Amino acid sequence: MEYTKTFCSQCGRDFGPGDHGFSECKRHRRTSYHILLSADLGEVVSQVGEVLKNLNSLLAKDGMREQLSVRSKIIRCTLTTSHELDRKEREQVKKVIVDQFNESVSAWKVSIESFRRQSGNVQQLVESAS
Image (cartoon, rainbow, N blue to C red; front, side):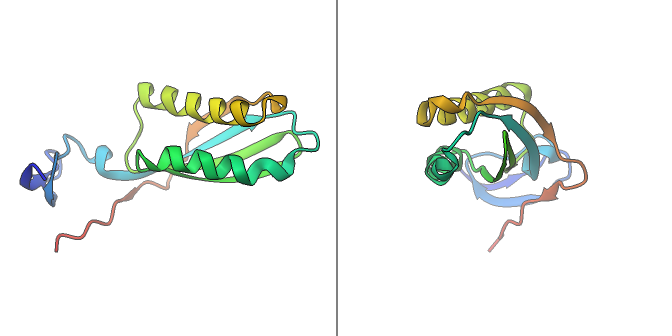
């Protein structure tokens, strides 16, 4: 840990020891994004579990997780992040998701139909100061 105390410049919340503080509150709040993917699933729905395991491993490195459900030609995914994603981060996440699916099961031809922030579900991260 680089600093013995870290803070949010906007609200003044103390985050204790860490490598960085936060310039604004939205950088220390959990945010969820609703993602709709279109896919030609055919008979390969059983492979979804393995793809999700790999995808979650990649996303976990950046403090993200996802939940997914599959129906017909639509894959519905909820991505929860440790902070609100900026435009560049959203584009990177979109690429990771599409690439992971298409590399794993190219026959699905996955594309992002919708990637939007869910309203009303931003929560502050629960941080232990002890």
